[in-house]
Length: 157
Image (cartoon, one colour):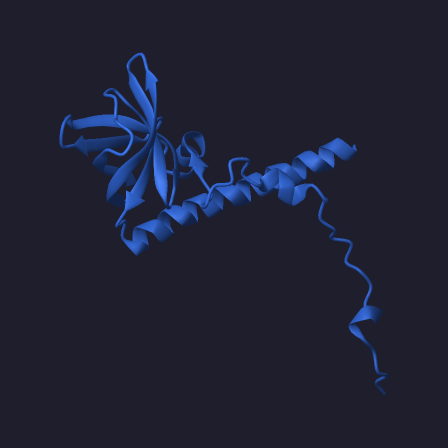
């Protein structure tokens, strides 16, 4: 015999989420896409200590820099030559077995004694490569979630 029951009759699983949980995961800068920093990229990739990136500009030629963080919409890098805000560039780098090549626009530049740090926005990045980069960001976010939840458990102890 079955009696009419409702979903409300089923007890809670007690899997509540900390009220500050989502706030701690939000990016303070309000980014469009989740970023993966260089350290996280190196942990997820093939064990290299750095993630080199090749940069080409019409005025400055071709030179190498280093990826600082990455999202499907762009990359933050350091370079030995100063880029100019609004400058059109091409970039290329390897993520595991994938070669990422894209056009990009320099959105911001911070001069450094030996070059600059810069934020580049990808243009015409193939969809499959954008999705691959996003999957790395998602993996990094899941790693952060575990650390956040672990930290909140330790805070209660």
